[in-house]
Picture (cartoon, rainbow, N blue to C red):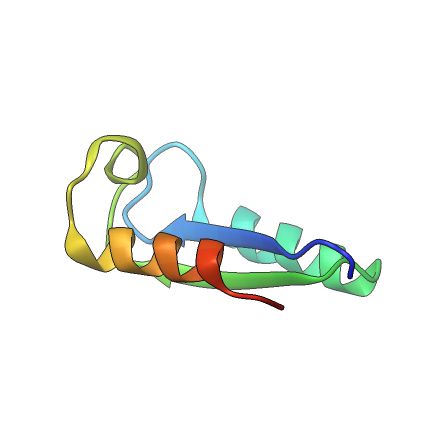
Length: 67
């Protein structure tokens, strides 16, 4: 089975604008990449240093998903 790329974005990200993430997602899908996309109500560093349950559950759920 081909890999699944999970792309996430923070709507309060001051480093990577959400519009860029959405465009990247669209281009990947158009190129046939198996990719999912989800936006969170967080900033850039929340994805690295946060202990927010919502992020943890989402990431762990995607890692444990089989397909």
